[in-house]
Length: 156
Length: 196
Image 1 (cartoon, each protein chain N blue to C red):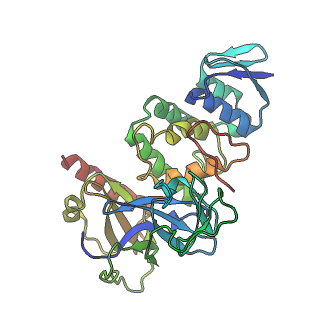
Image 2 (image 1 turned 180 degrees about the vertical axis):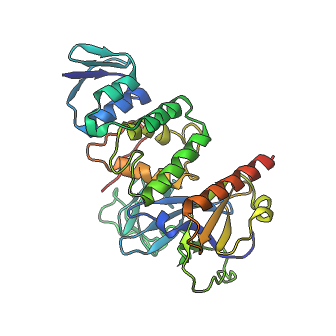
Image 3 (image 1 turned 90 degrees about the vertical axis):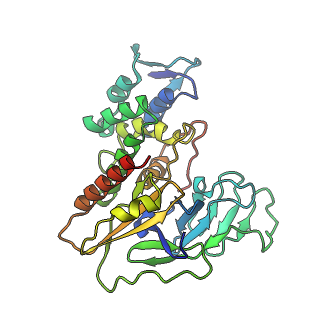
C-alpha cells in the first residue's frame, strides 16, 4: 500500500498525486503538511526519486526531459526554459509527439506541469508559449487528471 | 499601428477545443475554432466580470467563461446561457466583442480597424507556416532586420509597445522548418540583445 501526506498547496505533493491519479496507482492520503511518501514501509525523502521509482514502465521518461523538469522546478521563472519547452512541443505536434517524450505522457510531463500552470502567479504569462498552452490542455484532459488550487479541469 | 490586417496565429494554432491567447496593439485576444471549423477572434474579456476568456473552455459551438460559466456563441459572441439563471434568455446586447477573421496562406488574420488595407497578395504558391517567433522588442526594432529571401514571407504582429511576433511562411520546400526556425530564433536573440 502507498501512503501520501503533504500540503495541498505544494507543487511537490501535487506532482506525486498526479502520478498516482494518472497512472491509476491506489494510495491513501494521510494528514500532515510535510511531504511523506511510504510504499510498503519504504519511505521516500526525495519527491523526484519517488516519481521515477514509482512510475509504472509506460510512465518512465527519457533522461533528458526528466532532467529538464527538475531544472524547471528549481528555476520556475527562467523564461529560456519556457522557450525551449514550447519549441520542443511545437515540433512534437508535427512529428507525432504530443507529449514531452513521445506519443504518451510520462513523468517528464508530470514533472513540468505544476510549474507551467503556476507560472502566471509567478508573473510569467503563457501567451508567448502557444504550444505549451496546447500541451497543458492535453494534460488536463488525461483520464484521472486531478486539480490543485488554481488549476482547473477542462471538459472533453 | 497602421490600418492593416495582421496575422495573429497560424491556422494550426487553433487546435480543436482549444482557446488561443494573443494580443494585437495591446488589445488581448482569445481565438478559438468551433467544431465546424469557423475561427473566432474575440476580445479576451468576459462582458460579465471582465475575466480573461482564455482561461475558459472551448465547448465546440460555444466558449464558456471559467468564472461563472456564462456561455457565448461562436460567430456572434452572443451570450447563450447563464447557469445562475437557467430559464433566462440573455438580451441581444449581452455579447463578447468580436473582430473580423480571415484565414489565408495558413495564417489567421484580423484587424482592429474599420477599413483596413487589403491582406498582402502572395499569389497562388503553396505556403507552409513556420513556428511563430515571439520577440521581446517593439516592431520598429525588428522590421529593419528581417531577411530578404526568395520563398520566405515574414509578417510582424505588434503584440504591445514592447513585444512582437514574427510570422513566417515558407514557399521553398528545400528548406526544412527546423532550418527556418533556427534562423529566426537566432534573429530573435540578436534583436533582443540589442534592445535595451
